[in-house]
Amino acid sequence: MSIGRDSLYNIAGSVAPLALALLTIPFYIEAVGIERYGALAIAWLILGYFGLFDLGLGRATAQRIAALHDSSDEHRARVFWTAALVNIGIGIVGGVLLYFGANYFFRHQFQADPTLIDEALGAVPWLAMAVPIATLTGVASGALQGRKKFLDVNMSTVAGASLFQLFPLAIAYLVGPQLVGLIIAAIIARAIGLGIFLHRTHAHLLKRTLPTIDQSEWIALLKFGGWVTVVSIISPLLVVIDRFFIGALISAIAVTIYTVPFEIVQRISILPRAIAMALFPRMAEASAERAGYLAKRSMLVVNLIVTPVIIAAIFLIRPFLTLWIGKDIADQAGPIAIVLLLGYWANAFGIIPYSRLQAAGRPHVVTLVLLAQLPFYVGAMYWVITSFGLIGAAIVFSVRTAVDFALLHRFSSGAFSMPPMLALCGMLVGSGVAVNLLSQPFSLEWWAIGSGVTIAFIALLAHRIPRELEEMSNQFMPSFVGRHLRYV
Image (cartoon, rainbow, N blue to C red; front, side):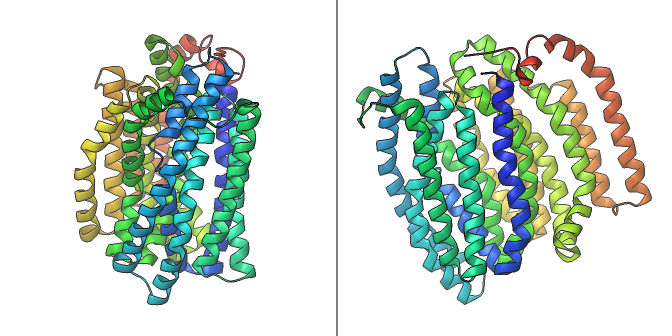
């Protein structure tokens, strides 16, 4: 199976839930109200965060099963059963921690109507029950990724994500908008999604095997997963802490205003994550030289596709938001979205060295990079939200993603230098952000600088890309159209 075909599966598996989310967000706001939607967004963030409380066993399972590509089916099955059985216990502990943490947040920190706070507190026990479901789903997904069964991974993901979006919305319209009912519906959807994942895992990995814990594999998984665990705790925290601060320091309405553009913009990472997911098992079984080559060429492909999308989005996001959710919210959310686009441009490239380091068995490097950022980021986020509001949060988030990429690239490739093509494209993206923050859509300045940025990007591609494409045309790019570079 080629990298290209697997990447396309991963893209489809991400785009379908995105399209559904874009369609359903206005209906959610209409059905439950803007303040209750903010509370629901916080509840889903909490569930998503604690769903990663699996000691890194999902990622460790993918890496270990990929590394055992020449081993027996029974050996790989023991890896899965060991990870799954240990993970169930870990998920229960995570659920207990979620219960007390979410109770404290909604009771003492969340700024909302008292009735809404009571609803949120009533939903907390159900959120806690969902944690083992989420963590076990991660292990099943990791096992399929390790066997390069990306079609099954993404079909299962789309089915589960669709239920997760639609079932609570149906309950909101048919029964009522109370948070407890919506959360229960979401958990039922998650459980069905887990069942689908386990069915596909059984088909590809577990036939004629019994659940058992292999002590040697347990040690190997925990050795890798221990570092990934810290990443699993810190990485999502770095992504969601802005909204927790906004909910605690401003209001639930402000969470909605910030969350709506964030949910749209973060989907930019679909492409690099799709490529990195397809590359991960291949880099895990490849030599260091080969893995470095795959990473370098992946960043070029990401740049060729993501940068024009980012530039177009920077100029079109405010008109889109106005048409989609109305002028009142769009006027506040538009500048936030523009700044976040710059951050997710940098994040698109950071995903590649992130995966390369973990695939090479160096998860401790990723962990230390994130740990080094955490205290500065938390302090800066608190200060800018209290001083500058929502736009300040978006700026600090974007600066952190740029720092994250620079550090991960340095430690994965051994050099701090930015590839010239990325540096030039970064200048163009930055120019587009600046003009859109300082001018109105469709004004003379907007048209003039937008045209200039577009022409400059096309000229840059015409000058720099031909020799890059010539070098990779018979090696890397064919894999992205599903013809060559087959790494079975």
